[in-house]
Image 1 (cartoon, rainbow, N blue to C red):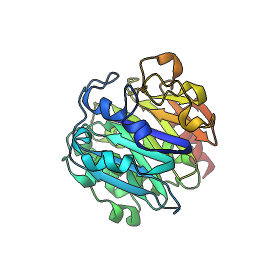
Image 2: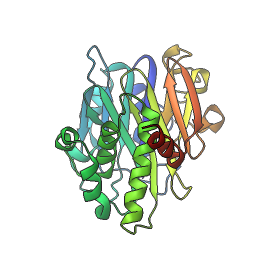
Image 3: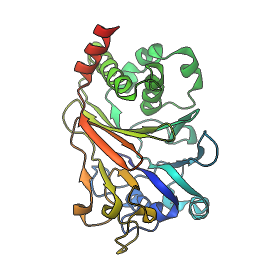
Length: 282
């Protein structure tokens, strides 16, 4: 399984999160602690917001720990909101186009998990995509397909409703094709201002997800200071950046999270019920 993190708050240099902490994301790419897969070496990506509405993106299929350009860029780029991801492939090729985060306009998306039996349901899911989003795809992953399904279903209007509908549609396609493997979804997406995250699995075994804010975020080994010195700073991530789990709050399984301007709200995520309500209201 992949590892990822999302940061929002006072602008900080990317290397403050990616390289300097005791258990940084780069360290997790070699030695993950909260995953069935220890090594995440099938590529990486970072996406960040600057002066423009559309985020910058740097991705490669090589391991994150072996890319000097990433280290150099991370020490020069500062951002108020950025995503970072290290990949462990679930079957699709190790290519730049398959590395997260994925970007469309001002939106970014990244994912840890998999759509069970994706090779058997990919065609059905492709037909669910609006033509403009089908044409926008650059890779072959289930993650990118899910991102464009979210956009098709109205991510820009109502993120939670779109996510619930997308999960319900994916699970229906899996059932129609006799897929018994689970859907596992721990993902994050952002419009450049707000960050949403979902932790869900059809078998109740969703990949780990945590968040920390203010003094609960230890950016550097032993530093014990909030990210960027700002109590509104937030990190949402696959696993903690240090060894003290008391500084971090676990997101419960089957929950939806919204982070905006230093405030985090979580609530239960029930995609089947939400999708039924959406249909009834249509």
